[in-house]
Length: 382
Image (cartoon, rainbow, N blue to C red; front, side, top):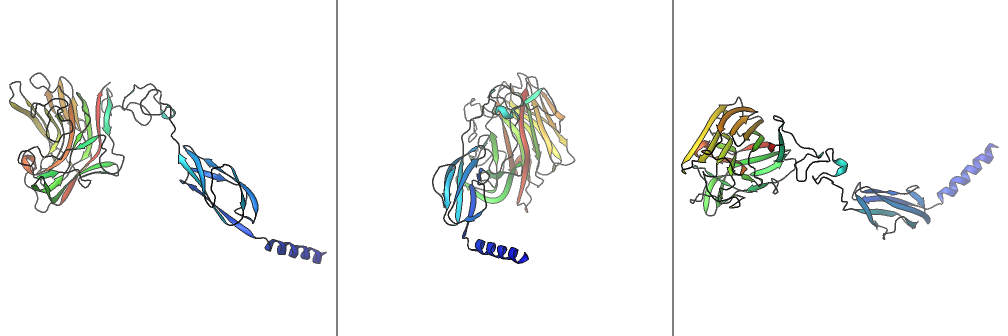
Protein backbone atom coordinates (compact mmCIF):
# COMPACT_ATOMS: atom_id res chain seq x y z
CA UNK A 1 0.00 0.00 0.00
CA UNK A 2 2.82 2.44 0.86
CA UNK A 3 4.59 1.77 -2.45
CA UNK A 4 1.43 2.59 -4.46
CA UNK A 5 1.02 5.98 -2.74
CA UNK A 6 4.64 6.92 -3.44
CA UNK A 7 4.27 6.09 -7.14
CA UNK A 8 1.19 8.29 -7.50
CA UNK A 9 2.95 11.27 -5.91
CA UNK A 10 5.99 10.90 -8.16
CA UNK A 11 3.79 10.87 -11.25
CA UNK A 12 1.93 13.99 -10.03
CA UNK A 13 5.10 16.05 -9.54
CA UNK A 14 6.48 14.95 -12.91
CA UNK A 15 3.24 16.08 -14.53
CA UNK A 16 3.39 19.56 -12.80
CA UNK A 17 6.99 20.14 -13.76
CA UNK A 18 6.09 19.74 -17.43
CA UNK A 19 3.63 22.72 -17.30
CA UNK A 20 4.93 26.02 -18.76
CA UNK A 21 3.94 29.00 -16.59
CA UNK A 22 3.79 32.70 -17.47
CA UNK A 23 3.69 35.62 -14.99
CA UNK A 24 1.18 38.46 -14.80
CA UNK A 25 2.20 41.88 -13.39
CA UNK A 26 -0.38 44.60 -12.75
CA UNK A 27 0.13 48.39 -12.59
CA UNK A 28 -2.19 51.40 -12.11
CA UNK A 29 -1.53 54.96 -13.38
CA UNK A 30 -1.84 57.31 -11.50
CA UNK A 31 -1.10 55.37 -8.35
CA UNK A 32 -4.20 54.96 -6.14
CA UNK A 33 -6.49 56.02 -9.01
CA UNK A 34 -8.06 52.57 -9.07
CA UNK A 35 -7.32 48.86 -9.11
CA UNK A 36 -7.26 45.83 -11.41
CA UNK A 37 -9.62 43.02 -10.46
CA UNK A 38 -8.42 39.51 -11.40
CA UNK A 39 -9.57 36.33 -9.68
CA UNK A 40 -6.52 34.13 -10.05
CA UNK A 41 -2.80 33.66 -9.46
CA UNK A 42 -0.02 35.86 -10.80
CA UNK A 43 1.47 32.77 -12.46
CA UNK A 44 -0.75 30.84 -14.88
CA UNK A 45 -0.32 28.16 -17.50
CA UNK A 46 0.69 29.31 -20.93
CA UNK A 47 -2.42 29.79 -23.08
CA UNK A 48 -4.82 30.30 -20.17
CA UNK A 49 -7.87 32.47 -20.87
CA UNK A 50 -8.27 35.12 -18.15
CA UNK A 51 -10.61 38.03 -17.51
CA UNK A 52 -9.47 41.32 -15.89
CA UNK A 53 -11.36 44.49 -14.99
CA UNK A 54 -10.20 48.03 -14.17
CA UNK A 55 -12.11 49.59 -11.26
CA UNK A 56 -11.74 53.35 -10.67
CA UNK A 57 -11.60 55.29 -7.41
CA UNK A 58 -13.39 58.65 -7.20
CA UNK A 59 -12.74 61.11 -8.82
CA UNK A 60 -11.01 59.02 -11.53
CA UNK A 61 -12.30 57.10 -14.54
CA UNK A 62 -10.73 54.31 -16.59
CA UNK A 63 -9.18 55.44 -19.91
CA UNK A 64 -7.31 52.52 -21.54
CA UNK A 65 -5.07 49.49 -21.16
CA UNK A 66 -1.36 49.77 -21.92
CA UNK A 67 1.87 47.90 -21.31
CA UNK A 68 1.46 44.56 -23.07
CA UNK A 69 -2.24 45.23 -23.67
CA UNK A 70 -3.99 47.72 -25.89
CA UNK A 71 -7.56 48.92 -26.07
CA UNK A 72 -10.37 50.37 -24.00
CA UNK A 73 -12.65 47.37 -23.46
CA UNK A 74 -13.38 46.89 -19.78
CA UNK A 75 -13.61 44.14 -18.58
CA UNK A 76 -11.36 42.46 -21.11
CA UNK A 77 -10.65 38.78 -21.93
CA UNK A 78 -7.07 37.91 -22.83
CA UNK A 79 -4.92 34.84 -23.48
CA UNK A 80 -1.78 34.48 -21.37
CA UNK A 81 0.54 33.75 -24.32
CA UNK A 82 3.66 35.12 -22.58
CA UNK A 83 4.72 37.07 -19.50
CA UNK A 84 2.48 40.14 -19.37
CA UNK A 85 2.82 43.62 -17.87
CA UNK A 86 -0.75 44.90 -17.62
CA UNK A 87 -1.28 48.64 -17.06
CA UNK A 88 -4.63 50.30 -16.37
CA UNK A 89 -4.60 54.04 -17.04
CA UNK A 90 -7.07 56.41 -15.34
CA UNK A 91 -7.77 60.12 -15.57
CA UNK A 92 -9.38 62.54 -13.15
CA UNK A 93 -12.99 63.38 -13.97
CA UNK A 94 -14.43 66.87 -13.88
CA UNK A 95 -16.99 66.26 -11.19
CA UNK A 96 -19.09 69.31 -10.39
CA UNK A 97 -20.08 69.13 -6.73
CA UNK A 98 -23.21 70.94 -5.62
CA UNK A 99 -22.60 74.14 -3.65
CA UNK A 100 -26.07 75.38 -2.75
CA UNK A 101 -25.05 78.51 -0.85
CA UNK A 102 -22.23 79.33 -3.32
CA UNK A 103 -19.61 79.86 -0.63
CA UNK A 104 -16.98 77.75 -2.40
CA UNK A 105 -17.45 74.69 -0.14
CA UNK A 106 -19.33 71.68 -1.63
CA UNK A 107 -22.50 70.69 0.19
CA UNK A 108 -21.00 67.34 1.21
CA UNK A 109 -18.37 69.22 3.27
CA UNK A 110 -20.46 72.25 4.26
CA UNK A 111 -21.39 72.35 7.95
CA UNK A 112 -22.93 75.82 7.59
CA UNK A 113 -25.12 75.54 4.45
CA UNK A 114 -26.73 78.98 4.66
CA UNK A 115 -23.77 81.37 4.37
CA UNK A 116 -24.17 84.14 1.82
CA UNK A 117 -22.51 83.98 -1.57
CA UNK A 118 -19.03 85.52 -1.50
CA UNK A 119 -18.69 85.18 2.27
CA UNK A 120 -15.23 84.29 3.61
CA UNK A 121 -15.54 80.83 5.18
CA UNK A 122 -13.29 78.10 6.51
CA UNK A 123 -12.90 74.61 5.03
CA UNK A 124 -16.15 73.58 6.72
CA UNK A 125 -18.10 76.41 5.06
CA UNK A 126 -18.55 78.38 8.30
CA UNK A 127 -17.78 81.97 9.23
CA UNK A 128 -14.43 82.59 10.89
CA UNK A 129 -14.95 84.47 14.15
CA UNK A 130 -12.20 86.68 15.57
CA UNK A 131 -10.56 85.06 18.58
CA UNK A 132 -10.50 88.31 20.58
CA UNK A 133 -13.82 89.90 19.61
CA UNK A 134 -16.70 87.69 18.49
CA UNK A 135 -18.50 90.61 16.88
CA UNK A 136 -15.95 90.42 14.03
CA UNK A 137 -15.94 87.85 11.20
CA UNK A 138 -13.11 87.30 8.76
CA UNK A 139 -13.47 88.81 5.29
CA UNK A 140 -10.00 88.22 3.86
CA UNK A 141 -6.70 86.66 4.78
CA UNK A 142 -3.73 84.45 4.02
CA UNK A 143 -2.77 81.52 6.25
CA UNK A 144 0.37 80.78 4.17
CA UNK A 145 -0.44 77.08 4.02
CA UNK A 146 1.30 76.58 0.65
CA UNK A 147 4.84 76.63 -0.76
CA UNK A 148 6.67 79.07 -3.03
CA UNK A 149 6.01 82.70 -3.88
CA UNK A 150 3.28 84.68 -2.07
CA UNK A 151 -0.11 83.93 -3.60
CA UNK A 152 -0.41 86.24 -6.65
CA UNK A 153 -4.20 86.27 -6.22
CA UNK A 154 -3.70 87.98 -2.85
CA UNK A 155 -0.41 89.91 -3.05
CA UNK A 156 1.40 92.34 -5.35
CA UNK A 157 5.14 93.00 -5.25
CA UNK A 158 5.84 96.73 -5.32
CA UNK A 159 9.28 97.06 -6.90
CA UNK A 160 9.27 100.42 -8.73
CA UNK A 161 11.05 103.06 -6.62
CA UNK A 162 8.71 106.08 -6.25
CA UNK A 163 11.44 108.57 -5.32
CA UNK A 164 12.63 110.58 -8.36
CA UNK A 165 16.23 109.81 -7.39
CA UNK A 166 15.59 106.15 -8.18
CA UNK A 167 15.24 105.02 -4.57
CA UNK A 168 12.71 104.82 -1.78
CA UNK A 169 11.63 107.42 0.73
CA UNK A 170 13.00 108.07 4.23
CA UNK A 171 16.64 107.55 3.25
CA UNK A 172 16.16 103.80 2.89
CA UNK A 173 19.07 101.85 1.40
CA UNK A 174 17.40 98.83 -0.25
CA UNK A 175 15.76 97.95 -3.51
CA UNK A 176 12.61 95.85 -3.36
CA UNK A 177 12.38 92.84 -5.67
CA UNK A 178 9.88 90.13 -6.59
CA UNK A 179 12.62 87.49 -6.37
CA UNK A 180 11.61 84.40 -4.39
CA UNK A 181 14.72 84.73 -2.23
CA UNK A 182 13.28 88.00 -0.83
CA UNK A 183 9.74 86.74 -0.22
CA UNK A 184 8.65 83.12 -0.03
CA UNK A 185 6.23 80.82 1.77
CA UNK A 186 7.65 77.75 3.45
CA UNK A 187 6.59 75.50 6.34
CA UNK A 188 3.39 77.42 6.97
CA UNK A 189 4.72 80.98 7.10
CA UNK A 190 5.68 83.88 4.84
CA UNK A 191 9.30 84.96 5.03
CA UNK A 192 10.30 88.46 3.95
CA UNK A 193 14.08 88.47 3.69
CA UNK A 194 16.41 91.46 3.50
CA UNK A 195 19.75 90.48 2.01
CA UNK A 196 23.07 92.27 1.69
CA UNK A 197 23.89 92.17 -2.02
CA UNK A 198 24.56 94.66 -4.77
CA UNK A 199 21.47 95.18 -6.88
CA UNK A 200 20.91 97.61 -9.73
CA UNK A 201 17.44 98.71 -10.78
CA UNK A 202 16.90 101.17 -13.62
CA UNK A 203 20.53 102.23 -13.39
CA UNK A 204 20.50 102.88 -9.64
CA UNK A 205 22.51 100.54 -7.42
CA UNK A 206 21.79 99.56 -3.81
CA UNK A 207 23.65 97.29 -1.39
CA UNK A 208 20.55 95.54 -0.03
CA UNK A 209 17.45 93.81 -1.39
CA UNK A 210 14.15 93.11 0.31
CA UNK A 211 10.44 92.75 -0.48
CA UNK A 212 7.44 95.05 -0.18
CA UNK A 213 4.02 93.40 -0.57
CA UNK A 214 0.69 95.13 -1.23
CA UNK A 215 -2.56 93.33 -0.48
CA UNK A 216 -4.84 93.28 -3.51
CA UNK A 217 -7.73 93.44 -1.05
CA UNK A 218 -8.94 96.80 0.27
CA UNK A 219 -11.21 97.47 3.24
CA UNK A 220 -12.80 100.37 5.07
CA UNK A 221 -13.14 99.88 8.83
CA UNK A 222 -12.50 96.58 10.54
CA UNK A 223 -9.80 94.73 12.39
CA UNK A 224 -6.42 93.46 11.17
CA UNK A 225 -4.52 90.69 12.99
CA UNK A 226 -1.02 89.69 11.86
CA UNK A 227 0.96 87.05 13.75
CA UNK A 228 4.65 87.66 13.15
CA UNK A 229 8.23 87.33 14.37
CA UNK A 230 10.46 90.34 13.75
CA UNK A 231 14.08 90.58 12.58
CA UNK A 232 16.71 91.23 15.24
CA UNK A 233 19.59 92.61 13.19
CA UNK A 234 20.82 96.19 13.64
CA UNK A 235 19.64 98.40 10.78
CA UNK A 236 16.51 96.43 9.85
CA UNK A 237 13.21 98.35 9.76
CA UNK A 238 10.23 95.97 9.46
CA UNK A 239 6.70 97.27 9.09
CA UNK A 240 3.11 96.03 9.00
CA UNK A 241 0.94 98.93 7.89
CA UNK A 242 -1.83 100.29 5.68
CA UNK A 243 -2.14 103.06 3.12
CA UNK A 244 -5.21 104.69 1.65
CA UNK A 245 -5.91 103.00 -1.67
CA UNK A 246 -6.31 106.47 -3.22
CA UNK A 247 -2.59 107.27 -2.86
CA UNK A 248 -1.80 106.25 -6.49
CA UNK A 249 1.86 105.70 -5.58
CA UNK A 250 4.19 104.60 -8.38
CA UNK A 251 4.26 100.83 -8.65
CA UNK A 252 1.51 100.06 -6.17
CA UNK A 253 -1.22 97.62 -7.16
CA UNK A 254 -4.30 99.84 -7.03
CA UNK A 255 -2.95 102.77 -9.07
CA UNK A 256 -5.69 105.42 -9.48
CA UNK A 257 -8.65 103.04 -9.12
CA UNK A 258 -9.69 104.68 -5.83
CA UNK A 259 -8.42 108.19 -6.51
CA UNK A 260 -5.11 110.01 -6.70
CA UNK A 261 -4.62 112.23 -3.66
CA UNK A 262 -1.03 111.27 -2.83
CA UNK A 263 0.56 111.01 0.59
CA UNK A 264 -0.31 112.00 3.36
CA UNK A 265 -3.88 112.83 2.23
CA UNK A 266 -4.47 109.13 1.63
CA UNK A 267 -3.80 108.35 5.30
CA UNK A 268 -1.35 105.84 6.76
CA UNK A 269 -1.76 103.50 9.74
CA UNK A 270 1.44 101.92 11.05
CA UNK A 271 0.21 98.82 12.88
CA UNK A 272 3.77 97.79 13.68
CA UNK A 273 7.13 99.41 13.09
CA UNK A 274 10.38 98.43 14.78
CA UNK A 275 13.48 100.58 14.74
CA UNK A 276 16.92 99.35 13.81
CA UNK A 277 18.68 99.85 17.14
CA UNK A 278 16.23 98.84 19.89
CA UNK A 279 14.46 95.64 18.91
CA UNK A 280 12.21 95.65 21.98
CA UNK A 281 10.58 98.96 21.07
CA UNK A 282 7.39 99.00 19.00
CA UNK A 283 5.85 101.97 17.18
CA UNK A 284 2.17 102.53 16.39
CA UNK A 285 1.62 105.68 14.34
CA UNK A 286 -0.97 107.52 12.24
CA UNK A 287 -0.13 109.92 9.39
CA UNK A 288 -2.63 112.11 7.56
CA UNK A 289 -3.28 115.55 6.10
CA UNK A 290 -5.41 118.15 7.88
CA UNK A 291 -8.37 119.77 6.07
CA UNK A 292 -6.01 122.60 5.12
CA UNK A 293 -3.55 120.11 3.62
CA UNK A 294 -0.88 120.23 6.33
CA UNK A 295 0.93 117.05 7.35
CA UNK A 296 -0.03 115.65 10.76
CA UNK A 297 0.83 112.55 12.75
CA UNK A 298 0.23 110.91 16.10
CA UNK A 299 1.73 107.80 17.64
CA UNK A 300 3.11 106.08 20.72
CA UNK A 301 5.61 103.35 21.48
CA UNK A 302 5.56 100.31 23.71
CA UNK A 303 8.29 97.99 24.94
CA UNK A 304 8.27 94.23 24.47
CA UNK A 305 10.17 91.59 26.40
CA UNK A 306 11.02 90.04 23.06
CA UNK A 307 10.05 90.57 19.43
CA UNK A 308 11.89 87.47 18.22
CA UNK A 309 8.94 85.24 19.17
CA UNK A 310 5.53 85.21 17.54
CA UNK A 311 3.25 88.05 18.60
CA UNK A 312 -0.06 89.26 17.20
CA UNK A 313 0.04 92.81 15.85
CA UNK A 314 -3.44 94.28 15.46
CA UNK A 315 -5.41 97.35 14.47
CA UNK A 316 -9.11 98.04 15.06
CA UNK A 317 -10.60 100.81 12.95
CA UNK A 318 -14.12 102.23 13.24
CA UNK A 319 -15.62 105.49 12.03
CA UNK A 320 -15.10 106.91 15.55
CA UNK A 321 -11.77 105.49 16.72
CA UNK A 322 -8.62 103.61 15.73
CA UNK A 323 -6.71 101.36 18.16
CA UNK A 324 -3.32 99.72 17.74
CA UNK A 325 -2.56 96.59 19.77
CA UNK A 326 0.03 93.90 20.41
CA UNK A 327 -1.24 90.56 21.73
CA UNK A 328 -4.64 92.29 21.99
CA UNK A 329 -3.33 94.91 24.44
CA UNK A 330 -4.10 98.44 23.28
CA UNK A 331 -1.20 100.90 23.39
CA UNK A 332 -2.31 103.60 20.92
CA UNK A 333 -5.79 105.10 20.54
CA UNK A 334 -6.82 107.96 18.27
CA UNK A 335 -10.27 109.41 17.68
CA UNK A 336 -11.42 109.37 14.07
CA UNK A 337 -13.35 112.45 12.91
CA UNK A 338 -13.53 115.04 10.13
CA UNK A 339 -10.17 116.48 11.16
CA UNK A 340 -8.58 113.01 10.99
CA UNK A 341 -10.32 111.62 7.91
CA UNK A 342 -9.59 107.88 7.96
CA UNK A 343 -12.77 107.14 6.03
CA UNK A 344 -11.50 105.69 2.76
CA UNK A 345 -10.49 102.14 1.70
CA UNK A 346 -6.99 101.02 2.75
CA UNK A 347 -4.72 98.16 1.72
CA UNK A 348 -2.08 96.27 3.73
CA UNK A 349 1.67 96.53 3.24
CA UNK A 350 4.39 94.18 4.55
CA UNK A 351 8.08 94.99 4.18
CA UNK A 352 11.55 95.27 5.66
CA UNK A 353 13.43 98.48 4.87
CA UNK A 354 17.14 98.87 5.51
CA UNK A 355 18.64 101.89 7.24
CA UNK A 356 16.91 105.23 6.79
CA UNK A 357 15.00 107.28 9.35
CA UNK A 358 13.91 104.41 11.56
CA UNK A 359 16.43 101.77 10.51
CA UNK A 360 19.48 103.80 11.50
CA UNK A 361 22.97 102.42 11.11
CA UNK A 362 23.33 98.98 9.60
CA UNK A 363 25.73 96.52 11.22
CA UNK A 364 28.74 96.26 8.87
CA UNK A 365 28.69 92.48 9.34
CA UNK A 366 25.06 92.23 8.27
CA UNK A 367 24.26 89.46 5.77
CA UNK A 368 20.51 88.79 5.96
CA UNK A 369 17.51 88.62 8.27
CA UNK A 370 13.80 87.85 7.96
CA UNK A 371 10.37 88.88 9.16
CA UNK A 372 8.27 85.74 9.49
CA UNK A 373 4.48 85.90 9.28
CA UNK A 374 2.20 83.08 10.36
CA UNK A 375 -0.98 84.70 9.05
CA UNK A 376 -2.60 87.95 7.93
CA UNK A 377 -6.35 88.31 8.66
CA UNK A 378 -8.88 91.06 8.08
CA UNK A 379 -12.19 91.12 9.95
CA UNK A 380 -15.29 93.28 9.84
CA UNK A 381 -18.40 93.59 12.01
CA UNK A 382 -21.12 91.03 11.35
